[in-house]
Image (tube, rainbow, N blue to C red):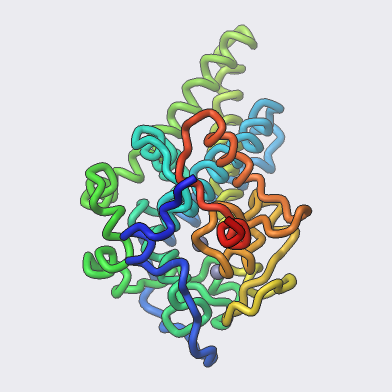
Length: 320
Ligand SMILES: [Zn+2]
Ligand SMILES: [Zn+2]
């Protein structure tokens, strides 16, 4: 089994050899309000609150929220944005990579290049001054506060070329970067698809259009808005909670922790100290009970021939 560990991409971003230096506490620079993030994030949270209304509930909507959290969060964010694009821990066919990336876009967590660049910056400067979301600046800041403030340095092409040059070399990701509103259109289109399908299924199963409208709204509220909010907070809790609460298996030079609860709801991503110790690995499971569901999906893809160059944990690599 070959790996991409020593590939130009992996070495250029040095994700496998990150050693945090100073740990001096500081206050992150609070830029102006970043309305382009503040407005949609607040709006979608508001729309998700409609789930409290009994009229907006349906069992199929609840099922869509639970399944969707895994499809859009686990496949889109964990597997694609994080392990596939940011760390190049595996390789999949280009059509599948772009499909996963489009699924990730439906979680409205920014374009692939920006997500990857920001995450690589986090690894390069974990809990240092340049970390975009260190809890040393406050846990609320690390959870979501950092998204609401402008960081002009991270909006430049220079920044993206420094931390995500390999992502920009792909024509699809470059297109999304040149026309970032496309991300919004993709999100709205997929929401519309949920609404239309709900309308049709409700009309056919309930026998009348009012039933169709009710199911349509339910699928939209539970299957899109609430699911989006759940995926956001799952991702954000990895940035916040796993740098504050949990145990440390490795002295990694920053504050990363292994957190069981986050690992459970984030399908493995909560074993964050393991991840900081060995960022190149496709797996964050270092003990038999530190279950990493995302890695099991990667192994499944490998088994059916859709994933190659899957990077094993460091202790397995070194044992070979
Ligand atoms: Zn971290
Ligand atoms: Zn990472």
